[in-house]
Image 1 (cartoon, helix red, strand yellow):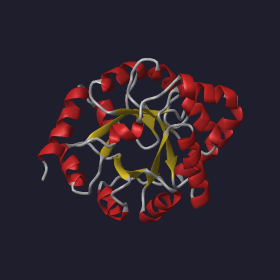
Image 2: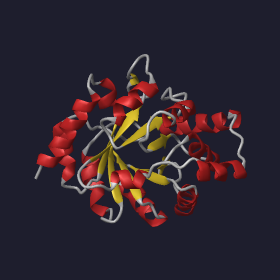
Image 3: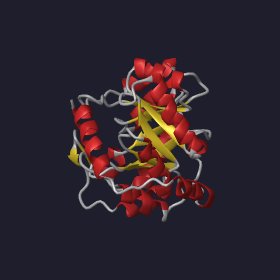
Length: 261
């Protein structure tokens, strides 16, 4: 299974990581390097949009050649409410360096999107400038473990976007104390897509939890389909990465949301 392969490779990568945890340095960073509020960016009235920087994926291969993450981030700054940055190196061709460089250039909240299996990745994310990290319920598949990771994230003055792709995982995220739940329309095991996943799963998520629809969002019709579910935000990667005008496409999505009954 693809997810199992990614996690196995991530375990090896962590053993080779050059990140050295220092608690005093981490908390000095929190004090002296504040980051914008990811939750606040998603909780405003209307549709919030998270634009993703993603060069490649296991299902699509290379999405965009010659990616300049900082330049794409600057385009996003005029179009979206937060930026998701793939930092997984092997399957998605990302890098933690992207996060650090982008944090220095734009003022939007940044989400570290990776396959988090160690608290060290969370500490590193905060030092690199992240406002939020992705926690995947299919990986942290235990209420206590997921809850501990959420607590670590909150303790670092960040937010956790807890990703689910079925009802069981959604229930786990709710019980673990998630404040933001991302519903992934892409199956993590075979990478098939179905936007009805958001429509189905959103029904069991309480209204006091922010809901984000992730993946398989390409057209205004997709936006209209998920609006009535009470979704607060969408995370869009491939559609933006392949388009010629990110600002215009984001406006089309917002208009579709606003005009839908």
